[in-house]
Structures are given as C-alpha cells and as structure tokens.
Length: 292
Image (tube, rainbow, N blue to C red):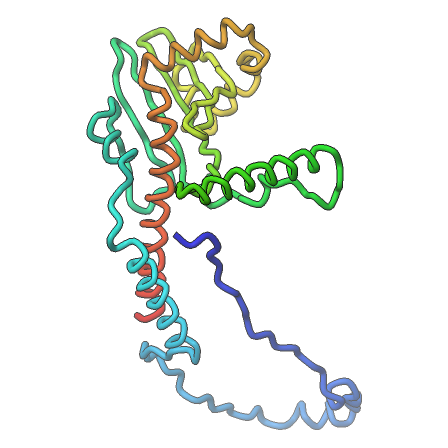
C-alpha cells in the first residue's frame, strides 16, 4: 500500500475584465429616449437551443483515465501474490467474534455473545488515513535533552544491529505501529451497558475510558436525540486515574471476553488490508465515472 496518495487538484480560473467601452459608456440623451419610444420593438431571433445529450469529453479526461488505470495496475501488482497475514486469517478462523465488513464503508464491526451479554466492537480505517508516521519522531532541531537521549539510543541500536549483521544475523527493520481506536459496548438485558474506549497498538489493548449507561441505547447513540441526552451524564473518571488494582481487574474483565492481545494485533492489520481494498475500489469507481 502506498503511504502517500493524493491527486493534485487544479481548476482553470477566468478573470472577468471590464472593457473601456463599458466603463466609459455615455449617458443617453432625452431626445434619443423620446425617439426610441415611438419606434416599433425589434423582433429578436434566437438560435434554437439544442437538447442533445451527446457526451463532450474534456481535454484531460483521457489522461486522467490513463493515470487511474496506471494506479490500479500498480496496486494490483503490489498485492497480487500477497495473502492475508496470519494474524488476520487465524483470528477470523479461531477468534470468538463475527465480523461485519461492508464494502464502501469505513467502519468494521465485531460482535459476539458472552453469557447473557452482547458485545460489539467497532473500528475504522479512517485511523490509518489520518495517521502521521513523522509525528512519532522528535524534532531534533530543538536540541533538548530528550532529543539527545533519543539520538544516543538510536546510535546504540545502530551499533547493535551492525554487530548482529557482522555475525551473519538478519536484522529486521523496526515497524512503526499506528494507533487504532476500538469502541467496545457490552450490554446486559435490562441492566444498561458499558462503553469502553480503547486503543489497539503494539499488540496491546490500551483502555482510555470506561463509561456506564443505565439506558443501553445511550452507549451507541445512533440518533441526535440520544447523543444529546447523554451529554450531561456523569460517565466516570479517566481510566488512568483509577486505582491500579482496579485497572488490572478491568483489564482481566475484557481479556476473559476475548478483548486481548490477539485482537490488538488483528485490528491494525485488518485496517491496513481493508484500506488497500477500498482504495483500489475507489480508483476503479472514479475511473469508471470519468470514462463513462
């Protein structure tokens, strides 16, 4: 998947200019107005307006279609021999969740039951599109101690990698994992719902917030009315402010329901795979529209 994708947008611009004859138009004389009042009105003849629906292609249409086709070919060539990562295939085969993935939608839904509970997990490929890898690196131009420590650590790592290569060991490049947000809703009949905001990164499910709603419909808030109703409700403190033992027990609570490290690896990998498919589909749709 290509990391930077953008179309340069350009639009012809026209500038209206006033002619000197328009600016310096002389005022009409009263005698001319009187004479024109007695003259019969001229019959104006207009050319017949054509209602033909024949297509008139723009000058750049063919070039745009060719570029889109080139991008489609490139994407297919990059991924034609690639199979889904084992983190995806294994999880879909052995994991406890049922997946709902609609073509053309950014959101992916995972659902399961656990006893009398209904569990719903949602995540979006929008997190990948908004991810900025460069933001994970410090600005060394600032020259502060933290940046210097980071540089020293990188030098140390580079030396270790060089030594490993000298010994014939293969050194794999370090992958930078993006943060994938996952929203979890756990419902119990007549008991309301827990809404848990988490982040999947580096093989871990990191809990950000835990909310409780007496009315389970507030957890998803599919209507503006429900979203407005829950605005003034007390939802609980930030998860990081809770007692450490309480945090550990909530982690265990989620782990027992299949919200664990396997899921934390699956979500970012699935987002990456889905985004590539959606991008290729988007290219084909735009090409078909322009060429029609």
